[in-house]
Length: 113
Length: 111
View 1 (cartoon, rainbow over the protein chains, first blue to last red):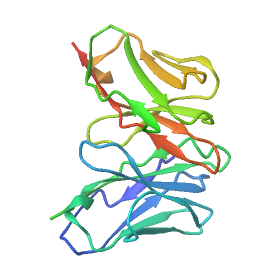
View 2 (tube, chains in turn blue, brown):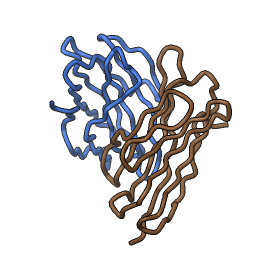
View 3 (cartoon, each protein chain N blue to C red):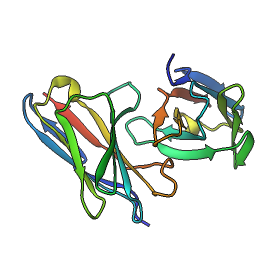
View 4 (spheres, rainbow over the protein chains, first blue to last red):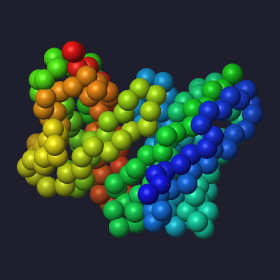
């Protein structure tokens, strides 16, 4: 069974640009979570989507946004990129019945120059 | 007080020894507890989940939960150099779904 997939693997952008990251959950999973992990730091919760709705949001500015599609895949959008947005962006998914058992994708490494 | 606390390490143990990783949490209503392993530059990988007080064993790994003391630990027996990674503790605080991750403990297994 395929795991969580993310694209792209790596991305280099400049300050002020916009970026879209994509995530496909494990088949049968309806919840998608986004996390930011800056170098040497812990996982910071960004967003949680379930059944197409945003269910919870971490302490990030509004320029971080996203959505979940009917097939449960998800996008994370970051506008007006800043240098400190450079990080590994991780997507995780879970079953509705076991929402808290999260399985992670390989991540997207974003570098902002 | 942080919601989930872990000693950042590094915790160094010799090959073949038992590595003990600890985690404390603040929400007494927490019901689900997880240990993830994360190699440098990679994504976290689920190792163990535990929901009830006591021990849960899976191969060389044992998770221990003490809700009264708000404490969860992970023991790794016969530690191998390949176990060298950062171990993340995660806690579901109940309610309308919130999983909080600790900052992780870096484990180094010395050959």
